[in-house]
Amino acid sequence: MAQDVNRRWLLAEYPQGMPSTQTWRMEEAPRPEPGPGQILIRVKYLSVDPYMRGRISPARGYTKGVEIGGLMQGGGVGEVVASNHPDWKPGDIAESMGVGWQEYAVLTPDSDGRGGVNRIDPALAPMQSSLSWLGMPGMTAYFGLYDVGRPRPGDTLVVSAASGAVGQLVGQLAKQAGCRVVGIAGRDDKLAWCREIGFDAVINHRTEGDLTGAVAQACPDGVDIFFDNTAGPIHDAVMKNLANHARVIQCGRIALADRAGQPDIGERFMGHLIVTRASIHGFLVFDWWHRRDEAMARLAALAREGGIATREDVLKGIESMPEAFMRLMEGRNFGKQLVRLGG
Image (cartoon, rainbow, N blue to C red; front, side):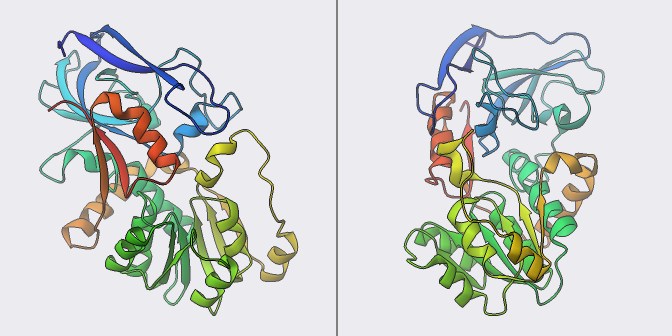
C-alpha cells in the first residue's frame, strides 16, 4: 500500500444486536499531515476492547460515541514519522487512546486525560504491551482490584472473562494480594491458562448446567470480591453466593453485547445486598486516569519480578479490524485482542 494513502474504518450503521461486517466501511484517504504541536504516527498495533460496543450505539453513554460516517474510535501504538512538536522526533514510539481504526494518525502530545499521548520505551516491554497489561487493561485491573475490591489475605475473589485482557491480570494481582482466586470462562483451553497462571479453581460457564451451584462449590465460604467483566447469567450466579461485606466491581457487560440499548433483564438482589451488606461499584478506568503513572510503574516492576504472564490474540492487517472486534464480542479471542498493521 502506498505510504501516501491512509486506510481507515468508518461507522456505516448502528448495529441492531451483534455487529457484523456491514457495521463499518473502509475508506482510503490521503495520508494526514501534523499541524503545529502535533505528531504523525504510522500505526503498528491497534487495540480491540469491549468498551467499543458502546461507542457504536446511539444510546447515551459515559462519553460521546461514533457518528455515522465517523472514524471508528480506539487506541493504538505506532512510530512517529513526522513531528511538529519539540519533544518528539521521528522514530519515537507513541501510544494513545485517540488513534482510531486507521493506518496513520495525527496526535497532539499536549492533550490531557485519555486523549493524551504516552511515550513508549520498547526496551521496557514490546510496544503492544502499552495496549494490554502495561496500558488501559492493566490500569483497569490494578485500580479496580486495589481501590474498589480492597483485597485482603484470605479473601475469595471471582473474576469473569477470566482469561481476557483484564481478567488474567486481576487473577494474578489478587493471588499476589493473598486471595483465593476463581476464574470463570467459556472454553477449556482458557481455563487451563488460568490454572497455569495461578488460579485456584475454574468454572466453564458454557458447559456447567448449574452455574450457581458451581460457584457455591468453588467458593464454600462465599465470594468476598467479584470482578465482573460480563454481566448476564454469570453475574446472577455469583451474586447469589456473595459473602458478608462483599465488594462487587461491575467493570463490563460483554455478555449483553447482542442487546446493546435494550433493558438488562434479570434477577434483582436488593434483599440479598441488605442481608450480606455487600456493595456494588460501577467501575470506569478513566476516573483513575490521573494516576496512570502509578499503575504503570507498579505493573512494570511486577513484570520485571516475573509476577505477570499474559496471552495475546493478534490478527494481521487493517482489513482485520471488524473480524477482530466480532471475535472479541463472541468470546472467540484468547487473551488481549490486537491487530498488527504493516510488516
